[in-house]
Length: 150
Image (tube, rainbow, N blue to C red):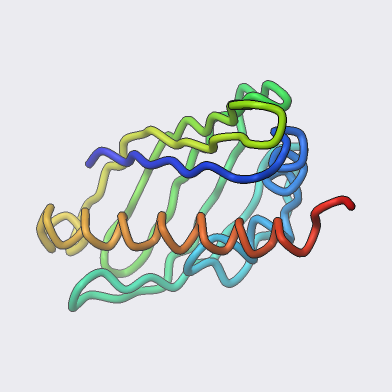
């Protein structure tokens, strides 16, 4: 399954970078994440509760940030397991300074699903993925509004 999306923020790329590098903020703005615990320099244990159409489940696994290039972006490697199936994804996150006051955050990646998750159907899962990405960008926008420098 392909994952893709973008959003333009009224912020500097460095400000967005700092927010995305903070585990507490990342847990707060990522839909479904109930716990994000740092286990190493760029690795985390993650717990999530996700509902995909008629299927819902608790996921447990690892998240790793690779190829960090401050403040331009990084790769997020996700490996999650649950009773309803497993999910792995490599997602490239880019932060582009568009002009003096705006930057665009974009993600592009692929997810592999197994078990009941994989059998749920591409259209249902794609719809949920789109809804989750909108929630993520809205939560990041809200977090940014509270952190903007005057």
